[in-house]
Length: 405
Image (cartoon, rainbow, N blue to C red; front, side, top):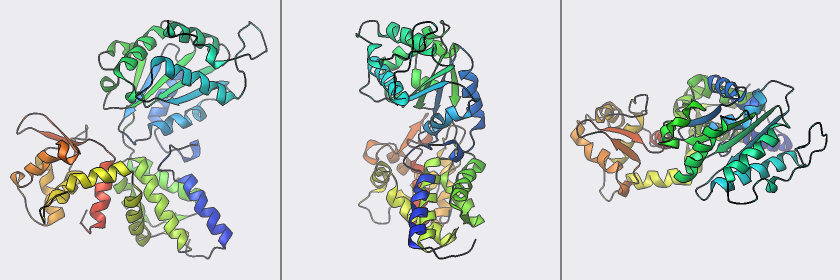
């Protein structure tokens, strides 16, 4: 598209719109900006239309689970009278407090009294707080409330986000409740969303609930899905991007939408600042530096804790970069030998495993923030980043340091 000059108002408006299109700190708010995930969307909608079934969406932090929940209703056939409610849970929640959040959120979403309980009644008399009147028999009170609510809508969807943050006892109650709920013909779908490698991490011993709970894993995004985020966003802004720059963003994002949005936002604004509608390599280089500055505080803090050393010319930063570049299996794990080739690429020197084994060991200890998880037995250890969002940050730091990645 080339270069063109902006008047002040157009520049300001385009810069503001960029933050609405690329949203690293918040889930995607609308369907048009949501990319890919067709299989996951189909599976969730299948569950919604199957009475007695519920869903658990799980996967790494930052893969877009909440974004899917935000746009889920827009994929349902129209016209349908749908009630879709999403609440966030935390470590202080009880089974009762979660359902109070749900019922209160329903009231806010409709901004009116929403449920009529008398047959053929047109009135909508509803007080969310009246559903749970005591701490005794809370599951039964909730079940009765759901029966009454479901009668008012063609579909009722209740999404419990950050389910993994709930105490074990509360998650156990949810498992039991969902299991019992499936025995009743109630047109309500509960969708649990949480961080975890598998349903076992979220529900542990309550695997008997699997009959009623469909497991839907959210993998990292494919390169095509990552590209769609960038091109859709730039299309909304009327901007373009050089092909090599797009390829680099796809690679650096490592399938995590958070970084795709973060890098794209900064690259877009840097291009706008120089009065251009096209993103170039120089824009990307500057965007990487800005993305490092704006990355989540916990990521930046944990990174520096992991590489800190009083010894000059230590290898901690290089070994950590090599780990981020190592080839992994389907579980995101890598053996020590997988670090050897990246170490040569990063340092230009050949290191045998003993040359960096102590670094791997320390990365899995508390003094370096347990940045890496070590599993298995001696000589057969496997390593995995405890926070998947750390890997792209390490890669960006490596690029900033001028490393060949």
